[in-house]
Length: 82
Image 1 (spheres, rainbow, N blue to C red):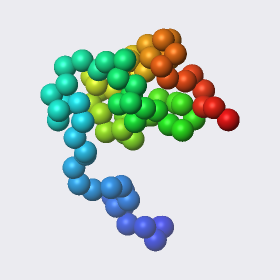
Image 2: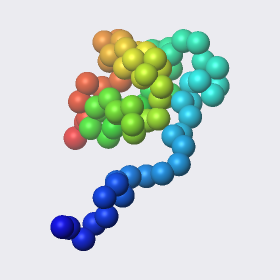
Image 3: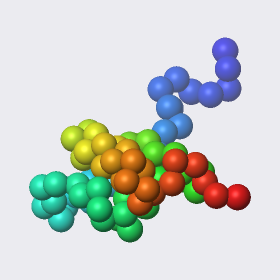
């Protein structure tokens, strides 16, 4: 048998962080608010995962859609600048 005990998991305990949009009662994630959307893309201009951002599934989908629209309007980059 291994030295690790069964069921330890090694994961993080505690509560998940609350969704920032739910906390502020935001009804619509606006693609024109690129300063807010910038928080949800990485330095490589990739959309961050839900487990990283702490968003609920509904707001993660809306945020991803808003980021894509902002990229289409050239408010956010598709790739990071060098």
